Length: 122
Figure 1 (cartoon, rainbow, N blue to C red):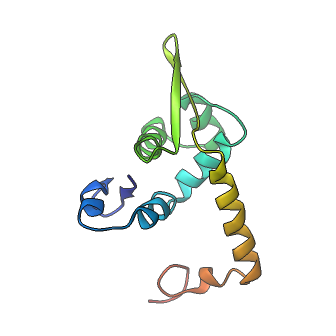
Figure 2: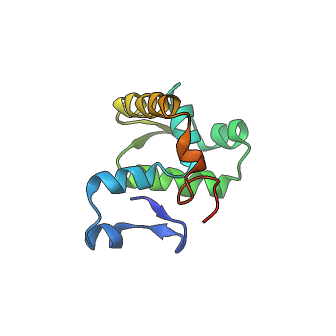
């Protein structure tokens, strides 16, 4: 489930209230930190310590977002001794993100100017 930024929790209650699975998927990817984690994991598995170092984030932040992505079924981990190695469960996620980049390029990144979702005024 995606983390609800207002409440700081996953949106499982919202999904139960009627959010479509597609909306939940896109909501789970609507956070820049989660996208950065997904992009890093597309290059291969990583430990929390690797992600904190490479992304310049606190361990608690990385762990929170990893839990969200795991709850969504987009990543998983394997334990090796006391370490956990995270990886993508669905490599086709990168195809989806590549398609999104193509769409953004084709629209001139107009979404960045959208008053509801980008940097424009509300």
